[in-house]
Length: 402
Image (cartoon, rainbow, N blue to C red):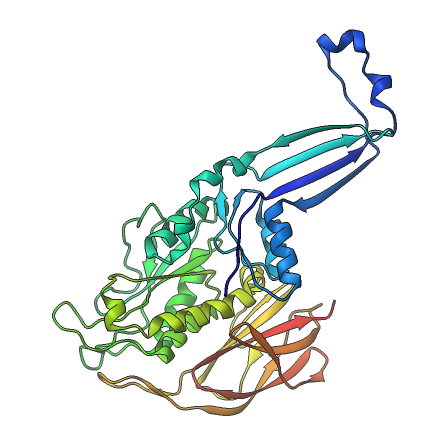
């Protein structure tokens, strides 16, 4: 069960005046009051009833969802809440407002002069719990609301479609007010025409090229959840394995956002399978969200490698940790039947992190759980971790020494 927490979100600024207000404010001049106080201490706190309740629930082992209004200065606060176990993915961020702010000066007699700026809190009436129903249009509206937070680094979009219908890097019009995006394609379920079957490494190449050519803008990926035949006949639905492979190939190459959508509600009746897998993948991403957003994708082969050339190995390093993403490229690509992956067993992964990054723990991300893996320091600047098995794709969280 998910607990949704609503309430205020604010920054609190507390200062102390080493004197007494009554000595500075003269009663006979209250009609022309203009005062300034030199304070000798200042403290800032993350506040608001919403985060306080959500944080307390997280301490009790829950993962509450905070649903409230915040402004353009919410970034650091949001990252902190995520690290404490609070889900902020559905926060209402208003890029033209500041987060609510409470400021107070206290004198030696504990008298106080305070001010409160409502900021984004006054816009909370624009939020609705109906936004949490998972409809694609609501997700798109939320991303439109938040896109200006990136400033000059607005996201570059990528769309997972069928490559023979949408050529790579075809310039398309804005969608819903978003920036122009490029198209990169992993596969179709038709694999037609013959000998033009899309392989996963194609998707990796497109994602890698989009990342390099879009910098400093981050790349977001727009993925269609339910597969389809073509305009004339239906073929089959995507399998869980095919969905997982597509997500992890692009995530491993530094994609900073994934938007899943249902093009037609009727498809949910025909292909109900993708929804649970999408939710499972989303839970895994929430577990490592701060590191995935802050980290930088590293050139393949420099920081993480495996001896098996059919395993795609990618790494992202950031100040709070690293992610190693492995995708199995050893599979049978069928004409109209699901792909079949060949499981790998006991895979050694050699890790060569950047200077000053000293790994302390390697953990496999499974749903919302972290499973410790066996590892050893081989040499200075060289670690080796063992992955027991790899069927389709896995992600390893690397936690550094403090």
